[in-house]
Length: 300
Image 1 (cartoon, rainbow, N blue to C red):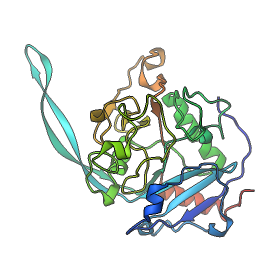
Image 2: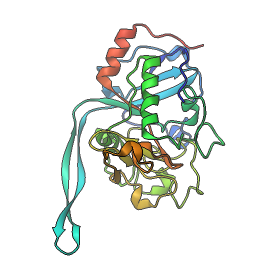
Image 3: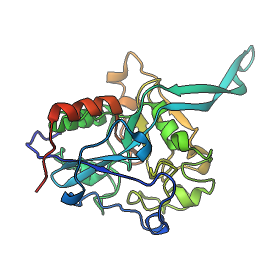
Image 4: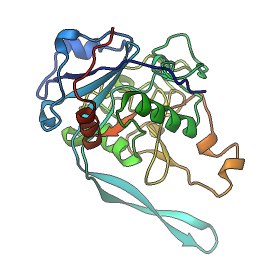
């Protein structure tokens, strides 16, 4: 169940270095989602200058939701093609690259939604692994994820939603800063992802491994992430999947069937200990929301 309680929010703009980041930050990424706002750093977000590499931070009950700005652009997606064989039926034929265009700037969660964040609006924690509130939330179905984002929207005024599958892939690849890695952040999966061979059979705190070019963490591994649009998909692999399912191209598409409300195995109502999500929002909608809210309020 989603709680409906009053909250105080703040939005913080923090500049990220666009050319280089310190080795210390790379080695010890900040992962505490329970920090209180830094009053000295509070200022309005310059939405018209995404080149600064800004991130927007929304606080709810002293829990922060960090969103990284992603500029629009294009990327090449590997698309499989099939042929109809008279004996074998539909079989794989070849694969081609298709150009996908992201037409609008957007923001996406720096981390997967954590259990700490989940509990700011939910009455209970559904996750199987719950030794640490900075573990990603799991065992949540698609409809509840969408309801969670809608509730955040209602409480904060900011247009939280789930990312589309193309937004997710573009961000995982590093956006217009992409270095074309196989996994989000590098070609060595052990440096960037918790997967079957290094996870110990459990989820891990968000942000413990190397980020990708946009400073997004755990885009591959830890938990698979739900996406919407262009066919709902699971992206990124999980702590219990093999490396070939954890690259930035892999997607598990599940189509909506007419009987989905009655089918407990359908993805829209499926819950699993390796399935989670991260949040997103349109940059233009976020800017409008900020203008409508006027001056931000500090959280105490």
